[in-house]
Length: 236
Image (cartoon, rainbow, N blue to C red; front, side):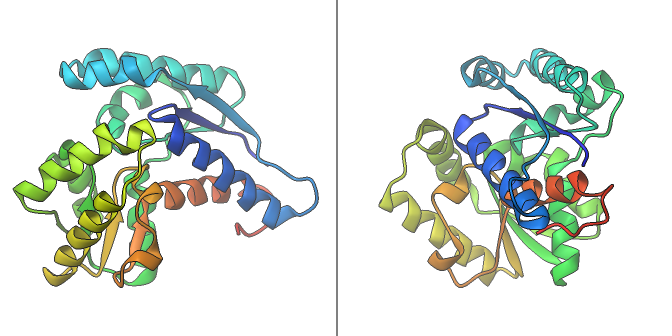
């Protein structure tokens, strides 16, 4: 098996889920006591969040790039950024390392094409929904993208940072997100991307009738495929 590096801690709630899903996938594929070879760097999200609020993306890139290098030094043969928003600094991370970066948007695009979905709704932080580093990459892969309206984008961003990344899950926010997902479906989305790795803590497929692409799970399953890629064994 190959070793994957995880740059996590942003927030640790979703990094915990990455670790669980990756190990479950490897164990399901190989059986017994098998588990995933992982090099993990868990950053202090308070420091990263300060960079986000200050628009100091150079510093953020340095922090994540240094963490990715530590993953590489620890034996990682590919690195993953365990958050959607911080793929804004993916180019800086790629420059810092000599191994591949497994980009979350590529994993989502691969799954959408496999399912035959052509138009994706995206719910996440404001920057994920509004900037080109994420939705633009999906469009480059031949997918149409729709995002919530201004009011819903503001509410999604608030819930993510004021609640989910601090471990707070409420029924009110669950219902609000379910409504946003339904609205995107009405606007033509074949499926909706949960474009923040913590949203899966709030909304699950059973809560809505629209197909969901949980970015955390899809990305973690791509890691399983990478880990097992040199064994000839299928990912779970």
